[in-house]
Length: 299
Image (cartoon, rainbow, N blue to C red; front, side, top):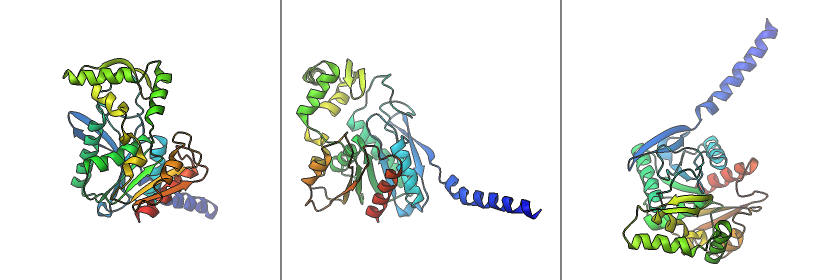
């Protein structure tokens, strides 16, 4: 009998050690906003009053894509509350990657409105203060949300491999991808707004990763109109809240980010952390480095 007890004790010990991790699984939460159900995932290992990180994914992705889910779970292991949200793109209850299978009606203003709605929801649940974190294009949008919408009581921004921008490069890339000069759909979108036809969509145009899509003019302009706000280093130049920019040394998606951030080396509120060997998505143990950098910065 003693030979049986030992394995059983080991099993019970393993279960006891596993239970806190099981309890920390992200909770799916929803929010009704502008006629849509928004979806997020909450990790709450600490008291709500200890604060929370509101997390935003990159281009046409979602809050539980690998990078976001891994970092969120690692933050939970380190005792940090977080809410990782899905932008709706106008889709009710949207989860998973955007599949390029329906029109795009939501642009940046709608994205920012959803972020503000989630901030309000967090406050209603007793969470605060709310730090903001974004990955890739989500990093740019988090920075813009803070700078353009001016949410109060934000203690910190964390931008993981945030997007950069060059107007000539963007125009050249669009023409290669679509076979059409970017100026053509830009002019069409501007004309539709001048004619007060915001609901008339551009038909069958290239949009981000989607080869052919029907897109509302304001949504197209929000992503493609040439402006410095698409460039994260420009957005955070002079930022008035502590801001951490995390760079992967092997990132070939925003390969110019190290050079661009070097221009902000003397910025009072901007800190840069480079993770050696990491690419744009910080997979595997590089995600631990991201989580460690975030926790150290927020502390």
